[in-house]
Length: 194
Image (cartoon, rainbow, N blue to C red; front, side, top):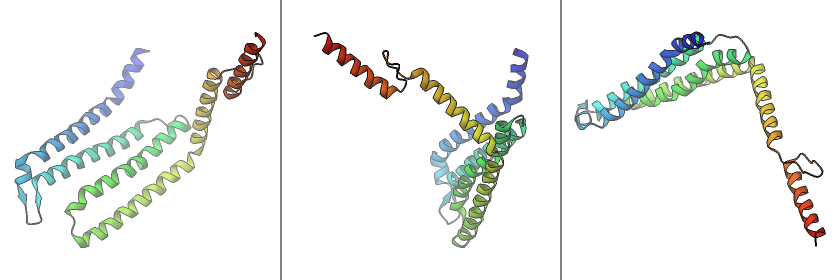
């Protein structure tokens, strides 16, 4: 069993490397953009500085790594059953919905007034198309959602059955009813023992 587990770990080791790279990009971006020399190094007359460029590059690299990781992970998930097929097909549009607003907020400070309107509409259309893509994936993989919901419901009801109190005398299964029955039986036994 260990060789199989080792193989699985080796197959997915790149996700750990990408995670470390994303974390490093974010930490270095925060640190470098706060350094005084980057804040004082002006770029043009628009008020931009090297710190803004560092934020653009650092956060842009982090978003690109997240996006590429999601696509590669989706391609690596074998579509064995409905759940894995949903992950494989749903991961890319879900990640795109998360990263596109971040990309827009990164490039927004560098856009002129006229370009903002055009680029905003491009991103609106991209987000709508991506949402439609995700909706289509969810629609075509509804069986996985139904199966998953049924499993969750079954687990909740199973754990609730084991957790519920039952009245020791009348065996009422509902926890609220059992508590009331226990109170009533306790009160009756206390009253009868007088």
